[in-house]
Image (cartoon, rainbow, N blue to C red; front, side, top):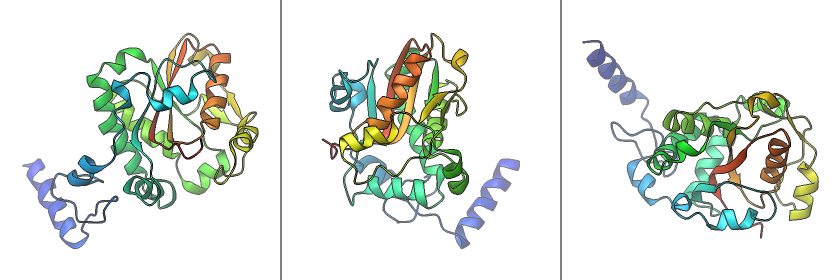
Length: 236
């Protein structure tokens, strides 16, 4: 009886406050969440998790030692993935990150990636930026992955100690110089000899990822892997 009452209340609320897909802005059908089924099927998936030597892994190879690197979608300007990321980061919709993490986590679990990691750690925001935004979009993605992979997600291990300028419009060298000394592992005992999955919202040149991986390995991680919502090759 309680379930039916909740369902009726939800339908009543939706009647007056209809829910929309954040990718296409069309109404969501009953049972759909955050992104409609049509968009979820049409969004440009990378399938990097079934190709170990994918474009992202090869891009980072030689720069930092990784167990694996993967991304859910390919990023294209003015595309639906960019629209989702904009809503996630700037329009106060953390649920987008959690939903995408949960969906992608199911893909990874079906290919036994849960057996390859012990913990999930998001690329951190500076405390002032997190206060202004209200959340860390990478942590929201990590939460969703955590639910599907059944591995803990920690946001208090890797911290950003220096506030950096935005990476937008910076060259590869400028991006690296912007982040090379801004991260710190606050609880090295929590990652010592652990297989860590480092997660981010979007990867371009990989400068931020590279800096984070180096800090985690220096702290004693057994291995570090990468997963992001999107990957773009614009920074090449």
